[in-house]
Picture (cartoon, one colour):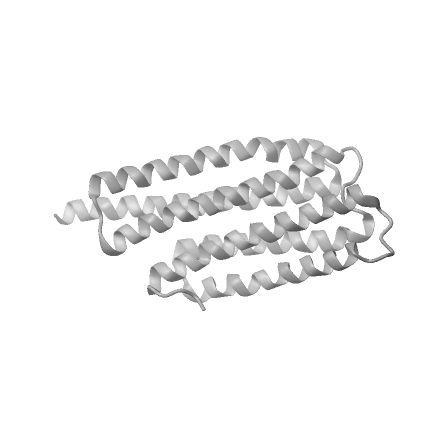
Length: 217
């Protein structure tokens, strides 16, 4: 029985590590997507778009392994909760990869022109950096199950929400001179970054619940 339990724990640890690895993949994709967007780098944008398939495949593999473990081990209580939580976290991470993919697609669509007007580059750069920061912290939360850090992720999300509101304010100013097409691009971009961060918050909340049995307030 002890050996069976040891094997099962190894499988759980492997799933957790795979989620951490997937988080790193997603973080890299968003970092590259932001660089491609701001530097009009078509090659890098294409790289991000292609990498989305790898992220999808990796997430599907994690799901398959979790389902296999549930079928073989028939876990209950906290073990089952950990596996179901892992399924949901994988889904959040896959969606984050999709959002990085969407950012790269806008960069590709507007190439060789810049999708982001010069006066907004600094703010979009800040959103990109904040998104990477929150993703990297989420990876640590998954790995360590640090509940204090899980709560920090939600507070970090406030920075992205603030930048989102700031850019919306710019778009609705009567002094906006870049036309409807660019306004739509920026509206979509900031929504992608905001939703990306929201998924990271969702993952951190799931870890918090997994550890404490309570929902983060």
